[in-house]
Image (cartoon, rainbow, N blue to C red; front, side, top):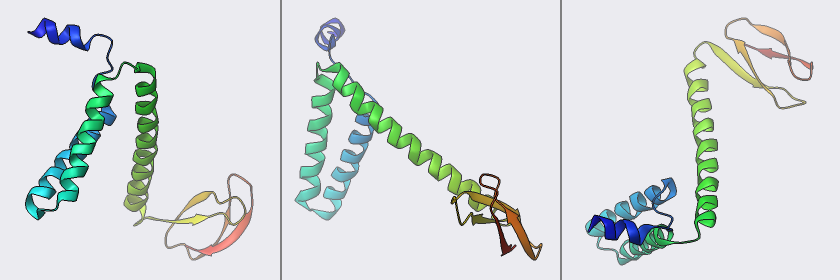
Length: 131
């Protein structure tokens, strides 16, 4: 039986990270539809599952790979933004963050120093702010 499944899946795309996300969202929609009795969530869940199985069984491997790469790039950018916000929040007790008025570069200065002249390291513009 295992050999038959392996033979059937030969040349097909299979599961990937985008598929895992689609399946997770469809399970969440199924749970919501169970508790709320709204058919729209059930239909959305079935649609997502159908699309995921279509992607898994697809023989257009290059196209499915490109879809997954786009998803992974978007996911990477979101994770980087989230980590940057988390680090910014962690440092907010010690530092103040300002944007350079000319180039919009983020600049970190220590808190509690009064009015200081800040020089942008990127464009060398000077501006005065309270730290």
